[in-house]
Length: 149
Image (cartoon, rainbow, N blue to C red; front, side, top):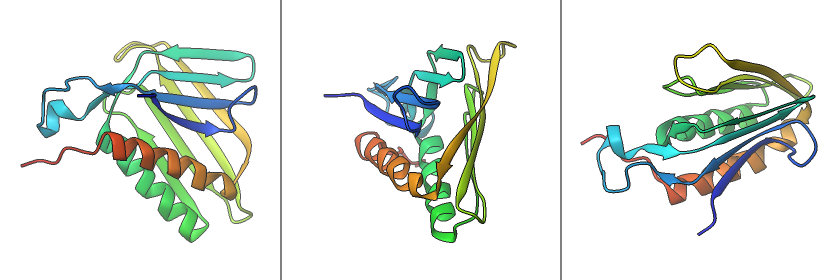
């Protein structure tokens, strides 16, 4: 089974963030707290910088980001943020009245450490949102949020 990939940006040689969801970190756990951790390394390419972060995101963080992006797309304005519990990534997509997007974020190489990369990605617009939402839906289908009981 292929990894699920989420690309913020256009990928390739252009500035982008790639989140590769490999699977559940605790595949035998079915509870909300342990079962929703996803092994999800992050690759960032911006300007002359690249970063590889061996991150762990939570299924509900990706779900909430998708829901916020769908709202932004429907309303043609506002912002959506992916914010990880352990501060691996903070990523905000803001839609302006012109339809252009501003993407700003930070990634950290280890929770609690001070090594971070702050970045911005330009050149995207509202028409780039559906592909991103589609990738998040694909991840959610493979790794649905395990609900609290």
